[in-house]
Length: 103
Image (tube, rainbow, N blue to C red; front, side, top):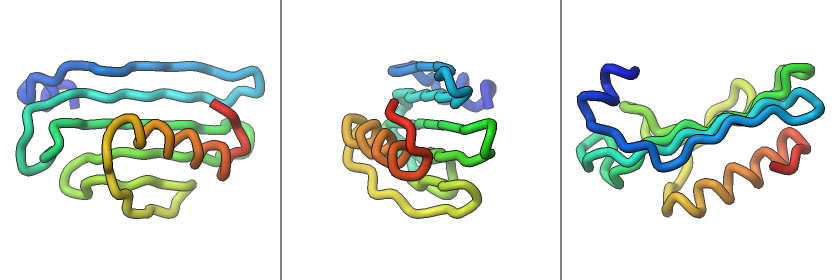
């Protein structure tokens, strides 16, 4: 993955890693990349929140060829990307709804 990102000349726009008191782990990566067929908005992202006790997780990403989508545990859903600000807001809402965690 690092090799691919080097070829794409990605610029990290957001990186956050945090472990909460109850053990829940949050990791967010958002990169600005050159617009192309795989990333037409010029944004690549990976947002992850995992509860290691229950094993429950919420993930959002847009890797090729799947495009924008999110996962709640093992179920995958399509996601309508409308911008980075909404992406983060939606992720926080999914984490609140499915994991009961306020991030």
